[in-house]
Amino acid sequence: MIKAVVADIDGTLTDMQRRISVEAIVAIRKLPIPVVLASGNVICFMRAASKLIGASEAMIGENGGVVQVGYDSPPVVFADIEECRRAAALLQRRFPGLEQLDARYRLSELAFRRTVDANELRAALDMEYPSLEVVDTQFALHLKHKSVNKGTGLVNVASMMGFKPEEFAALGDSANDLPMFEAAGLGLAVGNAVPELKDVADYVAVKPYGEGAAEALRWLARQL
Image (cartoon, rainbow, N blue to C red):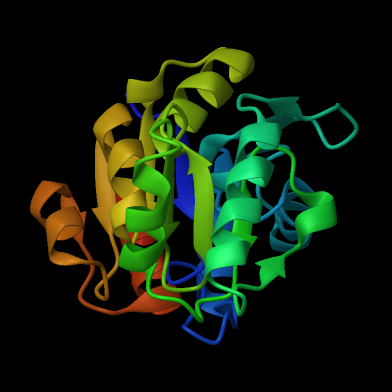
């Protein structure tokens, strides 16, 4: 039985300009089960977004590297940012135009503006930092530990909430949502989702972005 939802934000609840869908917010608030937001965003953004949207007090930030359950609780960090900082220094020497985003707020990973090809960053990283990876979410480039992802984030947040990962329905659009889909018991993809996510989804919305998220959540509500 599905007892909660874990939902990506950018490209799923929002469009590519990061404008959130009112229709998706309404669908979230009407669900009789909690909705956990999961994103590559920093945890302070996640906390504010969860409050404004009306989602649960549990959230997954930095692509699974940080989890928080309770608005006033301290975040729990699952990866060492110091190695990312050392790798970032290397990358910025080789790619001077590489611009960091939200660096002062990040706890487990680093993010960069998409001004450099992700494959070039990966090639520069592989030899010296094999435990790290670069993930392109189409909104930013994330330098993170391979040991954490949205799937591990879901496993951790589920445990902290007293649920099992398979009791969650996952909602997303991007390849970095795949580990979350693999850990969850049900997968919901919006209409603009990448093909590999649609292939493993239990429900694929006709509509894209937030309207597709609302469609998928209404479908889920009928199954509950």
